Length: 548
Image (cartoon, rainbow, N blue to C red; front, side, top):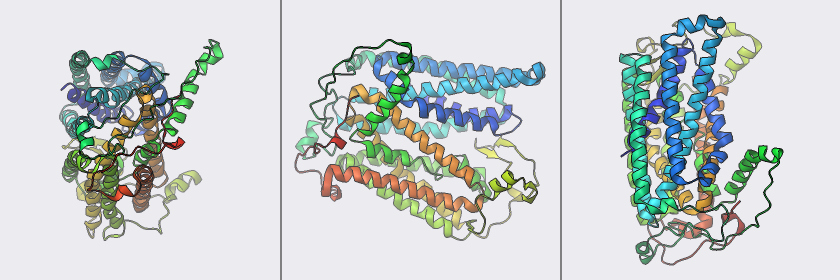
């Protein structure tokens, strides 16, 4: 109950902060770009450190601290934005605008702290508490993961629509106040509910040390599943019962040693991640972030260029959410009948099959794909100073607004609907979004599969560290996808981005196939036949989780 308003506030803030920054800097995307770079870079560098902090501290302390820091940062940032919006002209005149610049830096810094705290909160609740509450019931864990994902899908659609309507019909000032008030109320509610869950689940009070002579995380397969013949590799892969216990070395207290501690944590985190049995499964999930085939600002902007209006896009986003929910529900059913590892394989096949529609859209009638137009022409023109060769826009530049559906519309690249040239065919854009929406079923089912594999196969003392590194990998590939768009921003090159995106998705699923085939062998292809015999994973160094 408490997770819904908390996640809703998080989604509203993530949507609105970009609009607020655009409005502050004269309808320019500069502050938004800086904020995105700071957020991605921070999680990329600090993901392992955040996860290590989650591992080394009591669960309740981690959850409460993350919750309070995240919401207080959002509230403080909302109040600061309200002040800036109300006194922007006066602040711009003080010290030649340096006071306003300091406000921009402060807003981005506080917002980045809120995002880091949100990352810690996500790791401790979705990757740790859920596992402990589920106990040793793998089916219950799968159901809880699916429920959390359904809430995530619903808030991802409803929250931006709600705050978008407020900002569109009222003002950014009122929007800031609404988000700050929402986070204050949701923080108090979730704080109380976290305490109740902690009291009702005594296992949450017990946490493994960093170095122990046993691995706490046991097989999550229920006895009922074992009686039905489902092998251990189908649900949760068996942890090796012998852990390597390293002798405690004398602690060093030198200044240089203490300063280098974060670097050692980052190094140890990445080494531990590489040595996990689910390394290739985690890498496969990260590769899915290197894509333009989603409902982000890039695909939305391309859709506007192709003649789709905000009303149609809002319906497509709703259909995407429904498809994702269907994939979440299908995950629980397929897992019960085919096993966890096979569910990931099946989900990957479904996603890749649907994405073939996106590849077909590149060559379908109505596609702007044109290899004769260099995707680097705009960059070359700017570097050589040949700006006169670029076409001049016939409409006001650098305008970002919110339409009636709460969608972010960049008018600097999208002329009004009535000025769009008539397209020869909508077949290309129809195939593109049909593939994107249909692929959501396989995408979210695959995401849940890898999430549960990490939950079941990473020992408790490293759970936060490994998930922190996984978040870093996700952000790294996400950064690469934005760099890819910067290098080829024109609509004629969007087809190349689609093909490249599908290629990265395919490489990701190839990595998962390697993991699945090494775990199950030829039994992987018995999709509708649960295991008839119990067989543990082979004892090989690449498949044994390693403590650091």
